[in-house]
Structures are given as C-alpha cells and as structure tokens.
Length: 89
Image (cartoon, rainbow, N blue to C red; front, side, top):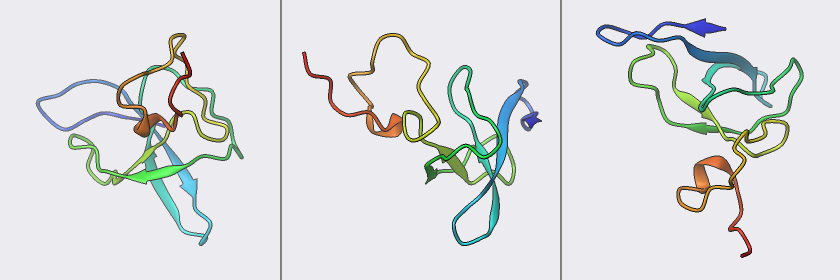
C-alpha cells in the first residue's frame, strides 16, 4: 500500500500489512528505494516508528529472508539495520 505522510511532508511512503507468527496483523514500513516483496514473502520485522506516518510502529529489515537489498555496493557502515554481515575484503 502507499501512504502519504503528515504535514508538512509530502511523499508516497510504501507500507505493507504483515501477519506475525502470533497471528496478529500489523502495518510495517518498507525502507529504501524499491523492493521485491510479494504476497507470502517471509520478512524480518524490527521496532521503530516512522515519525511522519501515524500508526506505523515497525520497519522491515532489508537483506533478511525474502526482502533482499537492491544496492549494488554492499554497505560497510550501518549494516545492522539491513541485516548484512561484515564484508570480507
């Protein structure tokens, strides 16, 4: 789904509904540019609200399960939010 943020921001933020293992359904923010999520994709959810989207309390973690990263160059800093291990250079 696409949601628009509160004033004064304007954009089209991507969110999705996720059913967690306890059976509860939550709305989750999809970070970054582009994604390859489909229905029945397995994802990892972390806490952390999105300030300009009311009611959104969770983020998806990129690079885990079926939610792959779209970046050509692997991240070196801030890897933990993307679920990436340390690059071996």
